[in-house]
Image (cartoon, rainbow over all chains, first blue to last red; front, top):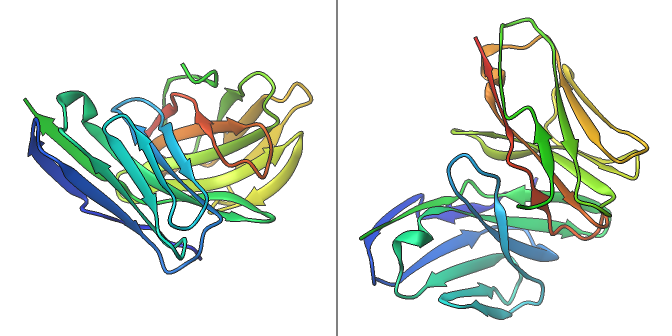
Length: 112
Length: 113
């Protein structure tokens, strides 16, 4: 069974601060995705990383896939209240393993 | 708007009852996934269909079943409901079974009383 551990579970910061959240596993994934979920809504895909060591930037968000494709991080620069939400990572096994395995998420609160 | 439509948005029912949740995938997507989300377990994969056929099965109880119809919409049937089945149920769709970039609906909040 592939498991994804996300840390921290909860994070409360002030507007303008930087933060990093982590997604770790003992399993190798063919790709890893990050989603953001707001209360009462479904998760929304932010990015997919595929290659070990890959770094992708989405405005103030920087995503990195570990060299061994077992872990990933999300760094947010100058956080804003609009960044508040549940950040979920999800790993795809690849090949005939079609399912996405989700971590339990990091609940981020950015206070004005 | 993700393009994935789920109905109903909210459902309250009694223990022992049976309910059906419905999902219409994004236009052109052939693959449909069902997930259950609860506070303690997070998002749990239940089952996946591709073009009408079951492709992957996760932690789906025997009391639960799903199908995908020729028009590609999918239904998740939950029977003999228990209090612990109360959760958010999400449907997601993607273009291909190997393309796991999934687009989620807004979910159905099921409350079993």
